[in-house]
Length: 395
Image (cartoon, rainbow, N blue to C red; front, side, top):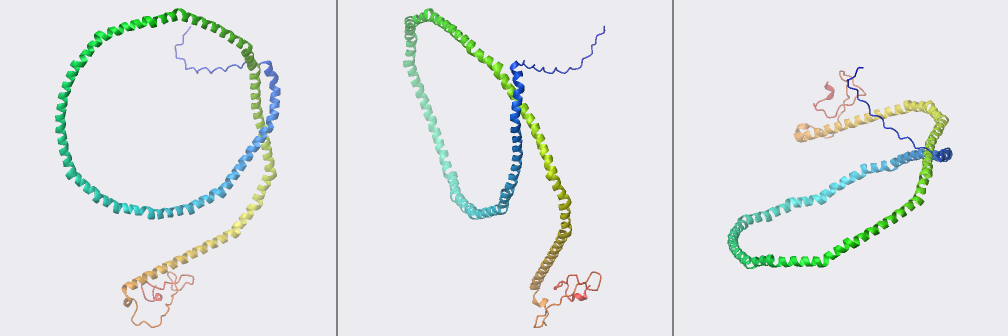
């Protein structure tokens, strides 16, 4: 016979044993099926109403949340961002300028200089030049007088201590040691003999045995009463609880659990059937109308009506922005030219032989790049030229 000395693999710990259910009595087996049937009949409508109320509550909650967000939250956010915040900032600036800045300026330019140069500087000078030297002199005098008084007090204290020890302490110690201590011990022994030892003997030989006998008798009576109560009242009640009430309550609780789960399956099946009916009766036709009618009509409106209008609006906006940009550039250039003329003087800007009547400058047509012909759609040239001269001769 061969022996295997190899290391055995680590074995898994044994699974915990499940406790075997206690034996069920006849009462449990008799009431189980009727109780479950009755509870199922009672719980199914309650579960279906509960599921319906839960679905309605979710829908109503979402609708109320959307309405609350639309009617309350959005206006409040807009009011906060566009009204309250600017007003608060403006009021903050005004309050800072009206209430805080005067006090800051008063503190910085009035109170601080007055306190610094009117109180602190004189007080520092007075402390350094007058109080500190006077304090050092008084301190030196105090130390000298203190040393002298301390020496005198030590000498007087030593003399008084010797006198008190010799005349008071030594006689009192002798009196306590040789007179009061023996007398106190004798009085203590006499008091014990007269007042303590008789009571100790009475307790040890009379009262204690009598108390033990009474306690033993009371304990016997208590045990008898407890046995009677346990036999007559507690045992029947415990048997009724263990054999009747606990099995009935356990079966009722288990029946409610099974009935609630079965009612949930039934409610889910009814809900799915209603969902299927709703989809086939309402959802599918609505989806067909949306995909077959509304979507093509919406695409036609978007491509035929909305897109051209949007493109035209975009082009008009671009043209308006271009016109405004050109007008701004023209005004800026005219302003720069006017400032330059004002700086150079009227003699350098205009000739001396200026006619009396003002002649409107002729606007020269603009030309395309690389060509001598004019382009009708091009923007006209600026009335004020930076290079001077006739614009038609340039290019």
